[in-house]
Amino acid sequence: MSIHSVLTQPSRRALLVAAGASSLALVGCGTRPQVVDYAAEKPLFDLKNYFNGRVDGWGIFTDRAGKVARRFVVTMNCSWNGEEGILDEDFVYSDGKKEKRIWRMKRMAGSDGVVRYEGRADDVVGIGTGEQRGNAFRWGYTLALPVDGKVYEVQFDDWMYQMDDKVVINKATMSKFGITLGELVVTFSKR
Image 1 (cartoon, helix red, strand yellow):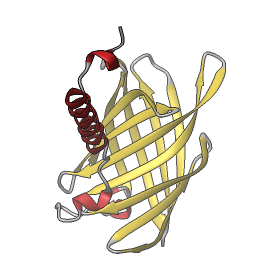
Image 2 (cartoon, one colour):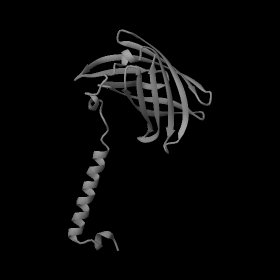
Image 3 (cartoon, one colour):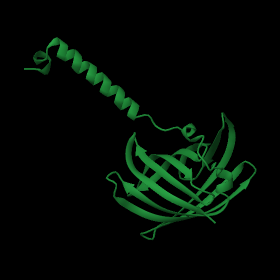
Image 4 (tube, one colour):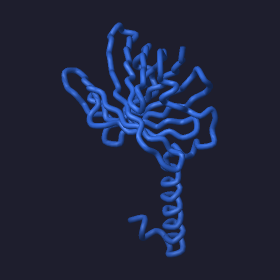
């Protein structure tokens, strides 16, 4: 016997209304934050000012289950010439592996108080794009990630929050086909 035949007409209506309400609630829960949500937050995050000179960072990467899969230290040497900047990152992982990434950044014209950036790096597919407002900076890009002799293109949704003039906290989600693969948390300290 099907559930459809067991339910009375009023019960079916109630079930449909409940299912519709649940769907709307799930859609509401799926609303992602936008950088403009942080417009009133202080201190103001000025990417060019913060990532200028030496910046050190300590981070972890957690897998889908939340287990710490990797720990690392990153040293950044950053410089700007007008609206174009270089963010030179040297990573050292807890297993001794080392990586280097050099971002070539460009500050773009913004509107409505949102400051926009574009960036390129050798292991980034295409162009990374970012927006800054208030104390927050959102950075999105596709990384060519080598794993066991293969290269996978994974997406990063990167959020940075300026805590004070010395500290920025970075939280990023790594995904593939919309499925979260893990999260990255980095604490940056400016010298």
